[in-house]
Image (cartoon, rainbow over all chains, first blue to last red; front, top):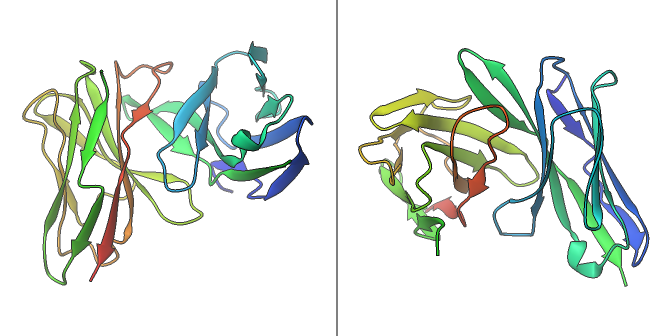
Length: 113
Length: 114
């Protein structure tokens, strides 16, 4: 089982709709969870972090964490064409005296005007 | 402006050649990282460093080497032992190394084999 799994997509949503991106992780000791946005040919940009169960909202973005189900999601409200990108889920856990950040392969989102 | 600078943006390697990718940060961050990204794949950790003069292997360190002689700089050398070096290389840094520390990335170097 992969440590961090995401549906590769592409996920297509119409402009103005809610985009829902999902991520599951295998290690129960995972402590911190991050969502990065990556445009084609560019570097990842941090958009959300979440550390405890529940929802965290920042503008049009909401991150949701359920540690019991080992599931983290990102909702994008009022999706815009500029949101079209690959979204990477990253999970941090402790191990061998350090904290390792493990990335999923990403979900490609396409927002259709 | 504070940030992470990677150079060059594009790099070509000949067979048997070692090449070095530069990473400089002026964020006063303690921790620095190198990741490799292949098309359609997630990021994989090559090496990381928590403090000057100390670094640790990541998941795919074979064929790579690093140094951390200055806090601001963390160059990556892709040696001839790395048989499949074509990838997008990303340098990152974080203020510290705790569970909530966020990573920030440079603009990346695309390495290709001639």
